[in-house]
Length: 138
Length: 163
Image (cartoon, rainbow over all chains, first blue to last red; front, side, top):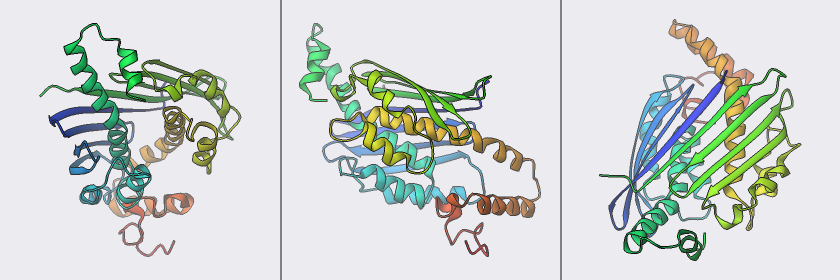
């Protein structure tokens, strides 16, 4: 029998050509949390963030919701951004919120690439997807 | 509004009849499908067997994932793991997907051991007893101190503990 399981789901909506909204959910046997954040694509900056703590382990945990606002202005394109998220959102707030924010950050380039590939396929249904992605230097 | 991109990740821990733990990690998104499996041996939490498979359009640096993951066989889950993995799987030509996968598998193993204690705490209904139990938990697990808002010096949980 499974003794511990965690699922993370991150979806990306493109609000305009330069703004993504990520909706991230993390559910596991112990914790349940959600994050929604808007990111400016060209510089990777978090413009808006809010979170919902659904299941947690003690009465202090919900105070971490307000700590999320310290992420506004942080850039997913700066060196060491993930460590900064864990320090500012995780250690000073909630590690599990930080895990969702980090997963959203990891999805930034893939989401943009995915959008661009879909656009390119629309223009050219016969496009070699592997060549297209290689040309984007992943 | 439709989604232009969706990522799903699952990590699960399953105890085996021989006492070892099977840890399975899977990721699927629009561009990538990845699977990592570790066999972890208590009590040292040594990673004794590994497998990895990356499909769809993995980044160039991850195309030899199934061989590269073997580098972590023999290491143990514990303090310093992040630094060890950075040396084995990270770096300029490293595969961050594999490194993240192993770290997330390791975290899941820790939470596998944490879950029974948290469930036991749920049976305590008296708030004072619950707080006392939480404080005892911190004393026996000092890595929790200042690890999050609940265990910072100004938290009501930490009041008077002088840790």
